[in-house]
Image (cartoon, rainbow, N blue to C red; front, side):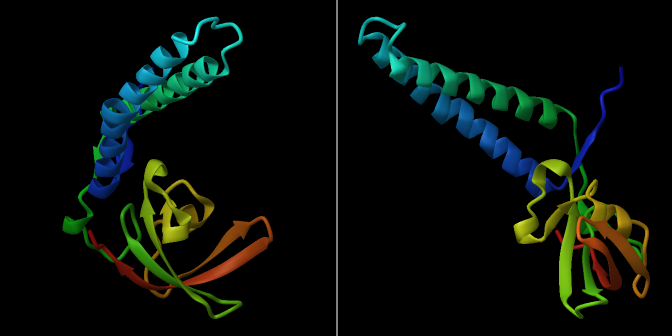
Length: 160
């Protein structure tokens, strides 16, 4: 059984560490206090506050475990020292949709830090897979639920 490395940017790694720290130092104590207060109300079998707090505790502990596992397998890639003519992990790519002439910029990041609303897409997404290895001027087709979309690569940058 091999343990797969999880690629991520320094910013993505820092965000996961911040979330783990918050869950451990703020949420855990708050939930423990809520469980203790609910226990003080008596009969636990019909105590909704107790059951809600225990459920929240389970979800929080599962998330902490997931974050710790991910962070232990993290391969932090410093994109500020990267360059090149081909698209790879960490690149910020500006493309133009050849059907609509709309320009779109994406940064290719790890699965745990993707945020499509902010232009950060996972390297395992269909768009990123279609862009990987391409150069400025190349065109590529991306399979989407609405059918194929064609993008032309306008710019490749490696910005931290």
